[in-house]
Length: 168
Image (tube, rainbow, N blue to C red; front, top):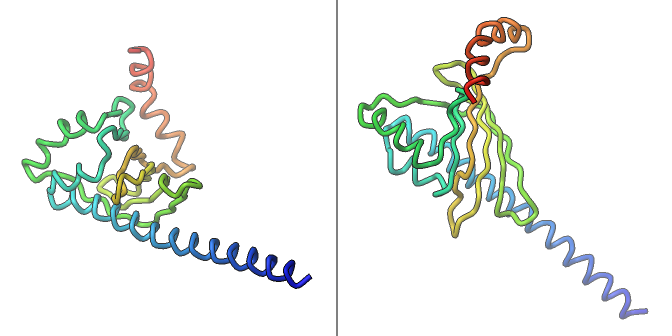
């Protein structure tokens, strides 16, 4: 009986210990991802081309607000280079961000609201742990439209949407 109690205590203790470490690691990891994403947004605002793109995985995809804007990292770099060179980039300020993790703790996805020159936008993406760094693997930027304004926006973009859909 004494051995059963000792085994039960050991199992309970190690289970609690594991849960505690996981939550501590998740908190630390959340802080690290937040720092990386905040710096990524800051890098573009201060025209730091290399630092901005070094935070993206080699196979990263950036999806912009226009239906045609689905870029590989290399395509996005080519598009952005003239803006960085002329110091005419953008300055998106994160407002609120949620981060979620897979079971391995090496993949996370997030959504964020941003204060931008377009008003409030939403960013969402996937980050992966590569060696000791978190890298952006996929990022989607969307313009937020209030529900009560959606019909007006749909009417404004109807013609261009039709051209885009029929061009394929």
